[in-house]
Image (cartoon, rainbow, N blue to C red; front, side):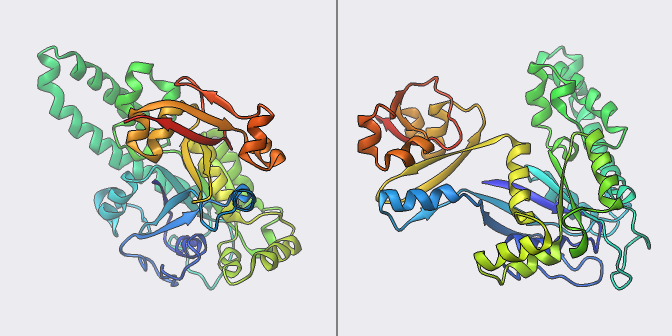
Length: 365
């Protein structure tokens, strides 16, 4: 399952956002640093209106959406890379996620203490980025020391790894997140991806604003957007407090409330969409009387790889994929009519799964 880590300085709204994301009250939210000690974990269903439409068409009562695991990680302070605050624990938890959601305070509130005494979102971002980079540098330097002997012996793989780690070390000196696809050749990318460095993970800046700034943002948000545009990151404007309030409303009430605030969708929906975009993900669907089930694969995945997401046996014994686009299936109303119209196709091993494909895999084990 995909994992996204919610990080940020203390008192920026991390735990409040986590509560909203997981529709729970599992994470503490108090006005003091380090109220979140152990990382809270919540599995969040990915909103997908197509599943409810298919539920009626195939006559099933079971709908299983795809999901993302969100991890609420302890607040970071300056010096975390050297063990300040809960630094070591915090940094270890970040290494285990697929994407980082960095909550940035973009609101003024004299009743909520800021760890540095003032609201400055760019300073906050750079504090965290610097600590992540410093920790990554220490990790890279340890690895470089370990492979020195192998490099001297002429081991080709060690020489390549040494080259990649040396380049990563240079890039980390800037204290920024790194888009490794821009800096490494194809043969080097796998080593870079497997490095488990924090600064190579996709990052979303969640600009946490007050209710009045949700629709149009503010000067703080403008600064975050400008920063993100220069550093290959995404920005989602969100009001964590409002998202938490939406938890107690029905779907209709929530939509009406958001409309009154001048926005068409919740910050959480936009957050999940942003995670999918950053991680370059695609959703395909299996649908029948037993259940309607959404599955996630990397965009560009071929049919056997998608089959393996359901079960490894499906990939090993893959024969064909019976594919109907969501649009064609809904317009037809059933598998039988879609087949009669020639809208259902038999695809082979080279077929690339498209978003919304309804697939039935044929396999032989």
